[in-house]
Picture 1 (cartoon, helix red, strand yellow):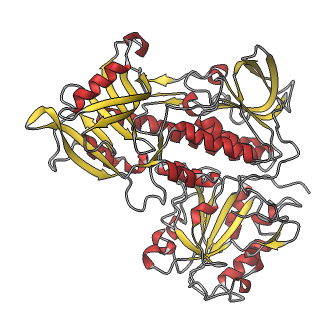
Picture 2 (cartoon, one colour; picture 1 turned 30 degrees about the vertical axis):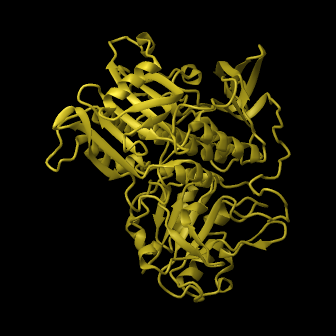
Picture 3 (cartoon, helix red, strand yellow; picture 1 turned 180 degrees about the vertical axis):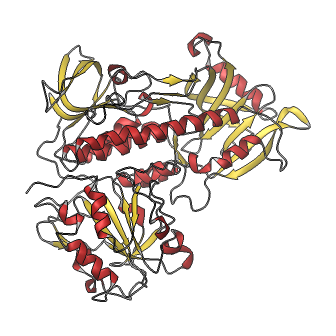
Length: 632
């Protein structure tokens, strides 16, 4: 964390200076973005937009107050990487239950009325992420997002007890604020808000989705499950492991240990629903859930000392055709103004642990794009990429969930290696459940793979796979990916070739000269007068030298930019590999040591492009396809 740039400021550095337009409990009638719903998608988006003092954002929620318990709890490795960008991953790591192994139990071949342990696997394969897969109450994740919102310059807080009555769009009548939203407060008050953009994060029964004429379509939700969070006493030996437990006659149970060392969540399979039947028609009770769990646990005992939360629900895989309000085929003529995210546009089983994670990914994809358009950095047409990119992700999620939901119900015989089919499926899908399998297709934001071989471990379109480095200025070991903050900026990582980086006519000097040339450099071309040099594109370099072999002052000043009202130097732009060959970022990520490369990282932590180290013209062409040129 960097601070004191414009002078010493006491107190918590995470609390940004209050902006001139702080919300302070006001209810503005005109806003840039209105977010509907305080679920994980809505709060991720609000936390992102709250960082920008010049963007007015409002978030409303029909419930009376913040979530306290229940609902989602699985946090993937990828979401933890995102939490690091928002600055609270360390809190989640401290509080959460870490999923280290997953254990599989099936009917005992000698006595199928009993269960027996059939196998166990490491939950996350080595090297997949520097972050763990964890379990934490969704409400605590909400709390951390709410804190980020409060600490931003807008001091953003939700309006609770507010629901949407109607939404209309009229670009001709109101070109600046074309969307009109009528809100109804629990107090009985009705108000109308004019806004540039609306984002519906209001769940599977989304009012916003209905207002733009979208529908969730897919498989009928005919599989019934129960779920309960309990404080239990049991002699089952794996109660503190994530466990898939398949019985011979009473279905499947999924055990998810919870944070705090005592709480456990148990998903309990129920009978299938008849066509047209709803979960509420069955009158399921928590006593029935406990009794069925006790039967499946046989020969082990289970005593529920306290039921913290429980529910019965039906599952199906449903998806809407588009995630914005622009009719298919009209994209060339109309830019989107109304969006949906999370459960408002895709629903599926909770047992694969992807719902909250994919919903937050939706919002993280959209937030920086709204910022870029609202600030005039990019044209409104950029916003078409949200639906295009995230709809493809949701389609993959539906397919994954369909296979996973089927696998955990199957109690077929073990295969030749005595591995239960569900265990085999779990291993096959490890990268997906960790959240790192999302790869965006080639587009204006995702370059071609012509130079992918220069850095094979930074797959274009995939999330930037962090690796450890040493900071040259102070020898601190850091994760390079952790420099990609949720601040809406792009990153360009220059991985220098294996030569003396201080040579006056060497590759590093030539790159710096090109990037400092207003006629060639996208950094200069897209810089706004008066803004910091790295306000839009943050350039950093990794040099394949030993720590102490060069002084940072011997390197081009472009990598030591002067910033703030005092012109202070930024000493955190330069890194070198760790001396241990096993931790060398060049080797870990397949970077061509002889030629080096440039790696472009989008604000949502996905790799946008890999280019030759001297490819400044190509770098400029890439950014010219995304950014508008600033006026003047």
